[in-house]
Image 1 (spheres, rainbow, N blue to C red):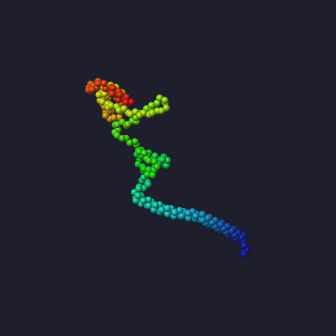
Image 2: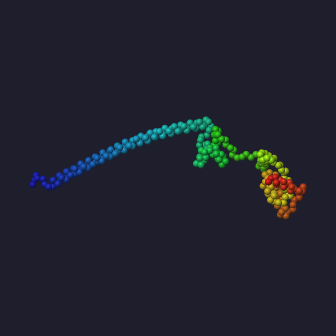
Image 3: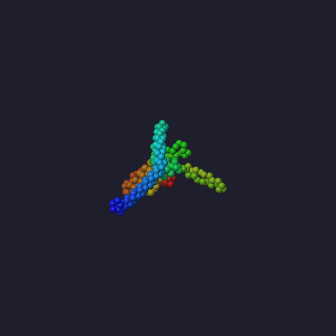
Length: 244
């Protein structure tokens, strides 16, 4: 009948009401989520703000320290130029860990080891308590001259056995070798022993000449006559005994 609502209009009204409720619920959920996100963002910003402030302070301190370091470097350069002292990196090369330990235990030993190896290093300071020893023993005189030997000492005991006296014997001076004595020796072993025991250049030259002459004679060549070769073995024998 006209003017009376039918079942279709009631169904449409019910659906419209349900849709309105669903939209209200969605709007409430969206507002709640937005509030939660805003609250989380504010909390994160409040947590990050001290870190950002500290980072900015560190950046400012780093810049100030860099400027201070540059100023100190320029002052060191000026002082080194005025004093005539090279900068520290030019004084010594890089050291190995073992060398660092050696330098910490005994700085002078590091300088001595580097000098023995031929590496240029800075010398120890003047206020060092120990003096650096020389790199090697100094040899005086010619290399062809024998080094002076210490005179032998003999202990002489008294008859009662209570006292002992040390008597230094002066080294006996041997007579120089002569070519005639060496040419008369027929044993290469004796000449080789004499060559090993002597350090005099002229004597070694004479002994080598005698060795060549002896080998030539052994190969069947004619011996070269040498005047005054009578009884030469006595002097050579005494010379050998003195060397041994």
